[in-house]
Length: 293
Image (cartoon, rainbow, N blue to C red; front, top):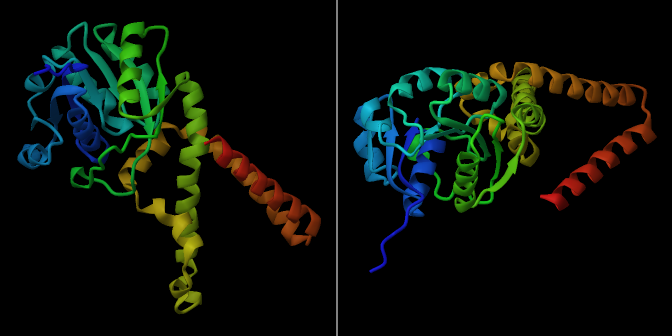
């Protein structure tokens, strides 16, 4: 009988929401990790997490979670990364690799390297996937398959830690790209964070006008559904993302406002050719992107 060869003997996952729980399931199911420890705030949920095969053990004991972990994954909001790192710092070994799933990288990477001070390798990761649902019970098998995953090693990251982290994501089925933390935050603000801003503002705009038209939502169809689906995402998570990538999100909003102002002026003055050019250009842009992804 062939003995299973694991990439990691043990992976500790801080936070077992949808992202952490889905990762735990796939690490075990694909034999990437022999053991997965789910580090959670509410130990009473541990038995359920284990029964769903999201982890082999779960609880809130940092020594049990981190002291013998080969890799630690921070599946927590950006705003609490520093707190988690300070908690696990006494238990990490030199060979330990620490990564994260956060949507913001500059702040996370800078703070992590400052706290760790070379005691362990930190490799920033952002798997760009998920769902508007939250909680471990909504875990998704193979959530990371075919997902884009941005990895942000720095000059302080060892080559072996970077390569092992990238390999893990590749085995999970992700398409991995390397960027600097700064490049990531600019890109994410445009391609991910701005759509959430627009979707929420759209929902707020429509809701504020609902009293003017009785039965307004009886008219809702595909456009409304597609444009507002992500509004159902965790408000706490997205407030955390917006605030921790504030500079780049505000810059992206400025770009959006300029384009909206241009469209508004063309419509106000009934510039038919300019409106058609605007719509044709965005149509072509979307088709170009569709062909590339």
